[in-house]
Amino acid sequence: MPTFVGRNTSIKYMTQSEKLLSTFQTRVRQMILRFQELKKEKEDLHAMMEAKDQRIKELEEQIAQMQKEYETLKMARMMTIVDKDLDGAKERVARMIRDVNKCITLLSDEK
Image 1: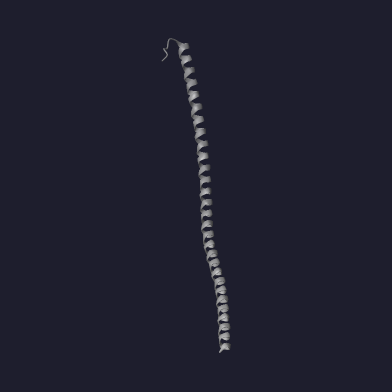
Image 2: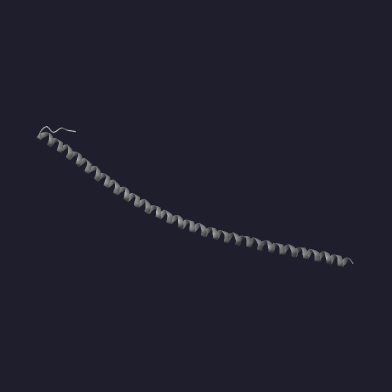
């Protein structure tokens, strides 16, 4: 702490106090500006997060819809395969019936 010997010393002390006060004010202004920058950045990040969350929600809904469509297509495909197998089975049964009829005809002719 400075000692006050005379008038020149108190002027010198005031000048140092003013410098310290000016430095303090500058730092406070810098802190306020930095705070405002960080606040704006935070708001921007929150807006980005909300946009990303909305996009995620949309994509999840799209995935769910596509899964439903896939299940429907899979079911339709299984039904198509069953129909083809049914047609094939009918053809095989018809062929067997013709073969049996031929055998019966041959056996009938032998008697």
